[in-house]
Image 1 (cartoon, helix red, strand yellow):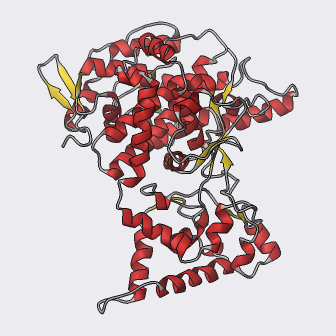
Image 2 (spheres, rainbow, N blue to C red):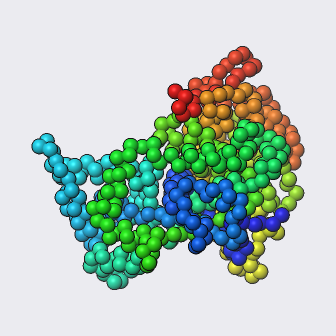
Image 3 (cartoon, one colour):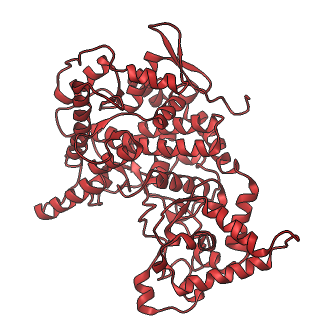
Length: 540
């Protein structure tokens, strides 16, 4: 099986993990940063190739997806929002990162903003400025301790969405610029502010976006056949990529309009209306056109994982959830998608004797306070086996590696540490799927946040499934197993034998957790239903 990528081929890329998993999933990017970057691409103006028509919808049209020109990358135009970040986040940044030009421009923004404020007798301009600053600081999403421009807001409205900007401290010390105009003077290519480093927003969200596009362009008959073979059991409508595309286009398009409109308007006003030259310099190129960046690529044969992710996102968007809760679930969904992509793609390209039923791996999920040594041991073995799976896959025959042994070993070591097995372990621990966070003996488990996400994305919105069928779907969609039969299949994957773990109550903790969370309807001692408490929007 060849390791092709969509929409462009990157066989020339030296890093084997980037060849296999897309450009790029990296251990340094946090789950919330995957979500921020994904929503940034969804909400920014986009085009397919330099000559493509610019569109503002979250996804390209179905006709564009079906007829995507070969070797043509998707491009999107993110805003930098330096004025807004400076106003809201400079006070929360490191003191040594606040260059004189930053402080001077910050004062300028405050003075201009103060001149725009009309107050009543009960307040002052300074009070309103402090209140606004505290308000926006409360939406700080990630990057505490970084330079203010490298931080990001929670993606709760359009006015908060921004690309990554890195301050070049070395160049500033060397050249000692004295005014703000100097540090932003070269449109789109400032030697002081870099927007092309991808250090924190490291392209992982772009990979997830490209997986959505890659999945929705697949032939309907192939999707239906895969659903039958894999037993992922999607709803009839969900198996139609055109229907799924239409619904996602609408729901994702409305996602950033669920917060108060005034919040986004104030953010936009501070960023581009109080002082407009900064936005012009950072958001446009040398010719004054929007500054587009390439959105990278994903594995072509990962469309199956991408299709499941598309269904997960639609179900989260259609459920009547609080906006913050929805974003938290979407953040965890992005993290689980990264894990699913790594494990499924590795299984698909594993260069050895292991060929297992979809999704190609099994994760033995143990109780949070598991005391059974056999279950703990098997859970640890599946964690180690997943690392081995990824380790072997990036060394397989599908991967182009340097012939020089020293160079090859260096590249593989870097891939293992940042883009492959350690990425899986790091992401799983951040999500709470793998415990403990530190030390040996890591095993798989679930916390309440992950369990609720799995229920909302697996059980039809406002509906219910039998407990046994719910477990079956988690195995088909995420490789997770909980009971004695599932552990037997996990043992077969790890050891090559289906030896069962003794005891019939291996999953008793799961039923108790579902019950405690109000997600279980106990019909009898042997029959229970898992219910999705979220109802469809508009059905209240």
